[in-house]
Length: 293
Image (tube, rainbow, N blue to C red; front, side, top):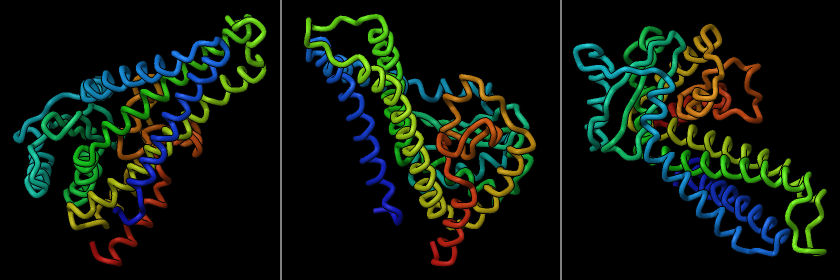
């Protein structure tokens, strides 16, 4: 069990988002008199999850316009990843660099055998090798903890909930296809259609924040140096403020994978942020350092 019970939190949050999906299917089933909607939306969620999970590496790499690099092109990055993956007893992932000054990094891939680690040019310039090691330890633990699967499941379920809620809103506004006089209250349907996507987004963001805390903790255990990651996070936060990315649809879909939120603070409210506050993460890392890794 992790120190902050993040695994249990993630399990409960995933249960919540799938419970919400089935509840919407049940509400539509009650409105139409057809209970098969529950199973239709469950299968739809599984299908979209499988697609997102299988293609997670390609989607994220494409969003950041990243290019592959070799040991000769990025010796420090290669050396650190090779050392940490060997220490963890895992295969060496593919390495990529994104041509942007915004300092950030992410790991993706459906399992350690099909993993990729990407750093931006900005983070490679900003951090020293010790700090880079802290960041790369964090990113590798996302792969080893199967966080790509977790985030893919959450994102796919949230996407299905949003799409279904939009259809539900449309049907409610235009009379729907109720079962005679047994049709559900249209005001209740509209309320569900409005609130369900918000609830799904909040749960998805909570899952992402929980996994970030987990990767901070486990990555610091892998490197044996939580203060290196704490120092890197402080530098990255200042660097993102100086060189924020524009929140395009592609980047928004990939932002939860990155070690720090890549957008300006005013572009993302704390409530809907995919990342915990940097100050909280640094405080936890300092606590780890005081207690010993």
